[in-house]
Amino acid sequence: MTLQPRPRPGGPDGAAPGELVPARGADLTLPDGRTPARPAPRRPWTGQDFVWWNTAAVLTALRTGRRPNPVSPVIDPVRRAFAADEVMLATCDAELLVWRRGDAVYNPSRGFFLAGGPVGLALTAAFFGGQAYLNSRRRRAAQADAVEKWRHLANARLTVSTHGIYLGTGEGIMPISFADVQEVQLTGTGEVVMAAANANGSARWKLRGQWAELVLVLWSARYLPEHPQLVGRTWLPGDWFVHAAAHGYDVDTSAWPRLIPPALR
Image (cartoon, rainbow, N blue to C red; front, top):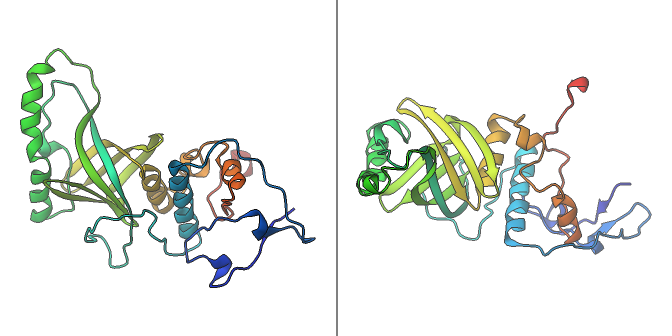
């Protein structure tokens, strides 16, 4: 049985392009005019739920050919670097980690990079210029720590756009285009592992931040729509759609990529 949203003034369901609005019980009707019963909420609606809900709105917009709207209350004033129609969508605090031993000295020439050109290379050096000093201080304290694992590299401000991400510290801003990214894998709530390469080198890092799932959705929707975490919807908790509906936040997933069993391909 299909639920029919009642029309809202000002546009389809009252929403701006790419925007999802909460669908309350009174806003949904069955074909016979009755209002359907909603499941009872089993847990509170949290800030993380709003992050997932807004990320879902971006995915719906992308899959229906619409321009996504900004989704975070505050977006840092970062100048776009990748396209004239680029939209800055969200900003949050973030942590950058790299896979290394505790006694390893990070070498900027082998690590992160920016878009090509002397300006990009200069900013890369500035961005990581302070790391050599930090690593030299840590070296003696970590001489016995030869275990490779994800280790803190820097705190940053993460700005996510339709075309890439921007990592800002006190030393500068490092833009990374989604076109250069080769891998995005969600490893936990608010945490992705990314790998990228361009003419200046390659890098692999872990990014922790409130909008990590948005990074996964934006990149995979454009460059890897068959991404297992996108088609399997495992970037969301298994019961999240029921949870959202219980709080009046319905999500239209009809245009989302779907997992097709091999037997049906």
